[in-house]
Length: 82
Image: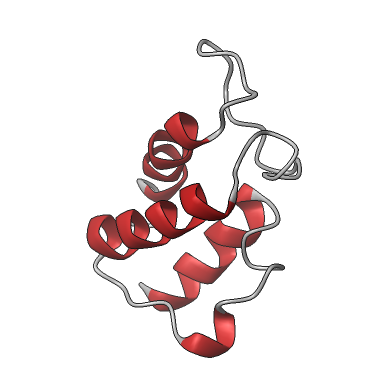
């Protein structure tokens, strides 16, 4: 996985977990994921899928609400780990 592949792959992972976002809409990376429909159960699923797809393990100190606030926050965390 390269840094150039990251944004598209992250959007693919996020899209099905955002139940308030229209199916044809692009994931707005700077909007609050909670307001787009990401709930606590979907967050756990998202975490596991990110770790699997990107081959990273998000350390406990980064398991904060801030990390999962927006797609951009998630992207910056993943970029630090790959």
